[in-house]
Image (tube, rainbow, N blue to C red; front, side, top):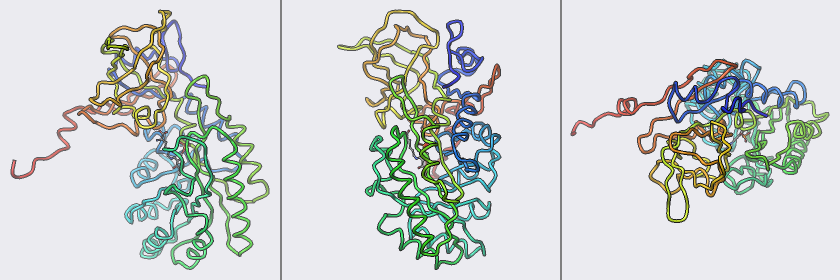
Amino acid sequence: MNHFDYRDGQLCAEDVPLSEIAAAVGTPFYCYSTATLERHFRVFSEAMPKGALVAYAVKANGSLAVIKTLAKLGAGADIVSGGELKKALAAGVPASKIVFSGVGKTRAEMAAGLDAQIYQFNVEGEEELDVLSEVASSKGATASVALRVNPDVDAKTLAKISTGKAENKFGIAWSRVKAAFAHAAKLPGINVAGVALHIGSQITELGPYREAFAKAVALVKNLRADGYQISRIDLGGGLGVPYNDKMAPPLPESYGAVVREAVAGLDAQLIVEPGRLITANAGVLVAQVLYVKRGEAREFLILDAGMNDLIRPALYDAWHDIVPVRHSSAHAKVYDVVGPVCESTDLFARDRELPAVSAGDLVAILSAGAYGAVQASSYNARGLAPEVLVKGRQFAVTRPRQTVDDMISQEQWPDWL
Ligand code: LLP
């Protein structure tokens, strides 16, 4: 459920017509709905056992305004870089609710996390443990750690966004887990408090979760039997969202039931790290049709948004619904919807049926609130699209469009030119 609906023939974000925002900020732009963000966070949190730390995965949408909207509802943050740490803190997420994930933390990032006194580092390897131990000891600090294990479970999602198989770079190999806990216990500056996992993203079946969670819970019990004090379990994120009407991923409630069943009686602090579920359907990318171009065998809708703005279709063959901003009862036509970037992969949709549109019309690419703006680039010297947050009848530009002058001013000349 989201708050992008047609009213009087105009697609609106809550109470604001997207055409009104387009007139004010130009196209393309990202638009997020506060009500949808809040609803998704609430529905997800309410599906979790009481007391769970819902650490929003900032990587899905790093807009400060989005993070702050969620932080005000009590969200923590799952971060993967020193940059995301700064953003989460700047947006008002308490350090006591921040979990630092990721396979390649630098010493400087570890130091920043320790200085901020974050809740937990999710450590992904013995090599990383050694370095965190060194960094923490040199500061006279102790890092709270969960070891992220790789449960070798197939999340049955797109291969490019699967993370919990043995062949993936993530987590500690299942056969090395016991050795890693034993190693960690001997290290100064490290307090291993938990087990963590994350098996992938856009997961649309509950089976892989059941399997992975059961393995994690059994591991916690096993470690406790060996004398380790394991008081936390982090089950990661990954719950899929519907990108169109035909997709029906499990609802948060059903996912919550699987979580509850898995951790029942475990007596551990539960952490979860949802990203996409909170933000994907809370955002759209609005673009203008530049040309309707007739090719040999097909018609191209050439938009002013490109793969630099939203790379998911090009990178993962991901599906995003595309709709006209002004409701249309025109006859349907089949288009290849493309951007202006000089790459054949700059394609949002092939053979897509849409009501006939003309140059100058606005279209909205839906479900673009997760892994959209955060994965954008300025390829072809195209400035990053602005981000707009709507709340009821109000809207605000939360990140202005990056101009070419901004880009030029960030470069410098070498002495010899
Ligand atoms: N926790 C960890 C450790 C993660 O690696 C991720 C996502 C999440 C939580 C959040 O997962 P979510 O709930 O959003 O599925 N760029 C890709 C998705 C990459 C996901 C990376 N990790 C895409 O556009 O589909």
